[in-house]
Image: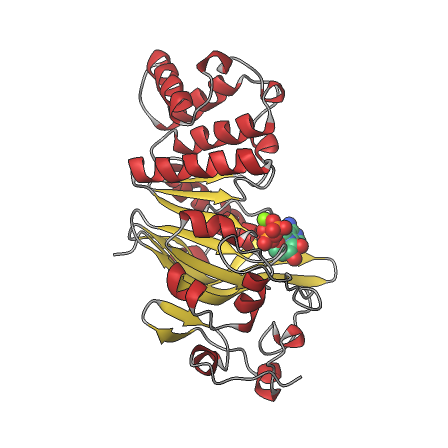
Length: 342
Ligand SMILES: Nc1ncnc2c1ncn2[C@@H]1O[C@H](COP(=O)(O)OP(=O)(O)OP(=O)(O)O)[C@@H](O)[C@H]1O
Ligand SMILES: [Mg+2]
């Protein structure tokens, strides 16, 4: 049994002019101890997917379709949940997630600055999280915080400092310590390193990789930087405009990308080992998710687009074991038989 199973997840936001279809039919699985990278351009729905899994969506957002199963329990989209009114549903979700959030699934927020309360000391806030979930004494919680500080490479002497006294890198590490506090089975790290300079980014990534190896938890790393994923994950899910474009084993996808969007995304990042070549940029910009294009959402920007792409949404199809692509011409691309039309 997979640890996390996301099946045809749909998350919409209500806005004045209608609905934003931020996540619109996303399916993936994560096994125990596995690391997956969730990548895609800004606004494609990565954070929304993370908030759906942790059930932390803002009031105007709702899971309108699909299911999320964690460790055998349906944590979103069960029959029971669907039958409830909005108010009762909020209570129901609270009840389910109280046992799971932080304890079993924890989230490293995209903005670590906002994740800590500015008026409490960092160490106290982490201790609070432990005390809320475990029946241990304050002294033991404090001891655990000291261990966690050491684990993530934070100076223990700074345990009683306030969040604003930390540098960006330290706050990010403190956020990781917080996420690890209750030994969760799954950590979702939303852009854990984007706010950091390149050197600090490398260190924090190395730290995350080490911790993952040592502690064996499963992890979803969300980023728009595909090179980050290459360093830490075995599996990748590439998202575009609320949908998965390509999904599976990272080596297979890096070596034999079979979706025009992923090919464009990979060509837009520099390769350290490959030959020097000008960086590519995908023409156009991502669509407005309140009014997404028909058919394949990438078709207006795709150089391979044919008429079927405007009409039908391509399903994820297997091009080889552990490698899926949502493109009407996935197999042709995989086999090198497709040439651009425009
Ligand atoms: N509360 C909200 N109300 C309305 N629309 C929202 C809300 N939150 C997010 N969105 C919209 O949902 C879409 C997906 O946003 P999301 O934050 O999930 O993207 P992302 O992939 O995490 O982007 P980034 O890389 O910039 O963090 C965007 O179009 C965004 O504007
Ligand atoms: Mg985001």
